[in-house]
Amino acid sequence: MGIKISFFIITLIFFGCTSQNRVKKVQILDDDAAWCWFSDPRAIKLQYSSGSKIVAGGVTKNGSVVAFSFDMQNGGIENGIIHSNLEIDDHNNPAFLELPNGKILSFYTRHHNNDLFMSKTISPGDITKWEGPRRIEITNDEEEELYGAPKYTYANPVMLSDEKNRIFLFGRWMGFKPVMIWSDNQGKSWSKSRVVICPQPFDPGNRPYVKYYSDGKSKIHMAFTDGHPRNEPFNSIYYAYYQKGSFFRADGSLICTIDSLPFEPSDATLVYKGNSKEGRAWIYDIKIDDNDFPVIAYARYPTEVDHIYHYAKFNGENWEDNELCHAGKWFPQTPEGEREREPHYSGGITISVGDVATVFLSREIDGVFEIQKWQKYGNSDWKFSPITENSDYDQVRPVVPWGIDHHAPVLLWMENEKYVHYTNYSSKIKFTGF
Image 1: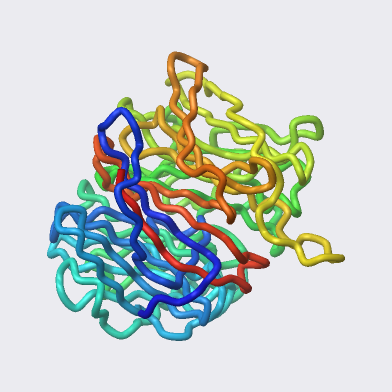
Image 2: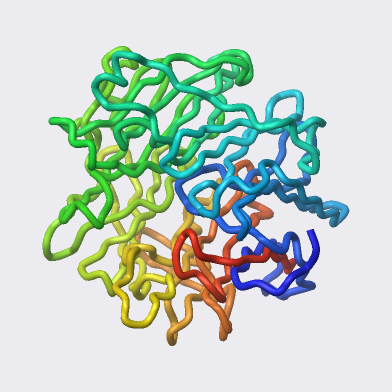
């Protein structure tokens, strides 16, 4: 892809072990991409085919699904097209999974439509060439009678080594509810679908939002909401995890088995209860600490123009919840005279992999969203340092690639000159070293 003038930058930053974060160089990684934050991992560090390559992807301004990579050892940059001209919508960004043979699977959807896709690289570790997209059609006649025909949004793949490398795939696919399927043959065929979370009685307009995380061994961690903060006046945050065919609360007590799905949000562990004073909430990230306890980053909205980031860590008995900072309002550029369609689009917050005492967040400073690094000292003391300052354009939606070594962390984010809506954007991808 050639270098073009554009308006929406995803920046990739490498933090060295030096005492100061000094920029060595800035390069263009790809000149056109964007993403949402509910299809993950949208960035990974390869483990089998390469120990030094970062792979990520997005959706171009003409709606093509693309991948791009950077080799941290030799500086090589590669770009590839997974699916040309799918749809102009940043919800359709790909999520990646590296197979033990080094080939990479990508999963993505056409936003709330009839298409869920999987594609695979032709060669191990090489994102420049992909096999043709293959549709995954979920099937469960009994659930379709209850929830309606599938409409696909988001894709979240996880492979668990303790289950013989079974691949699990999660998304919002049926009745606006989180759904799971799994494959025991590297995606050649899939199980019947199962709706995972559904408040009762069933409401076809209700849509819980889920963030997933796994270290790829035995557990899949889930942090989720009652629904969309636009629709749920007291939207709360919950936690559950999957292991060996069942779902559990944070204290290890059983919620249900796969055969007994779905469960309700209230069946899981409550992290934050939305209320009229402190506001409704939305989920942004989940990771695990050295004790395998969940750590969650989310936003509260006492008003639509006051987004407040929170960091909640489970200590084995209860949740230690820290308020980090006021983050400003939404980042989309609302057309003059119009009401903002996505007032809960915060700049975004992500937790570092392997070092959950470090988070990266985007907050509004003097009218512009900037990226900051926040580090926890002790139980509740936090210090922060700027990653970007005096920016001309908004810096938003940071993400740390899954599988990265926390001694050499990597951060990706987007810079917006133009972001009016998730269907109206333009972007380029940059990275820089320190």
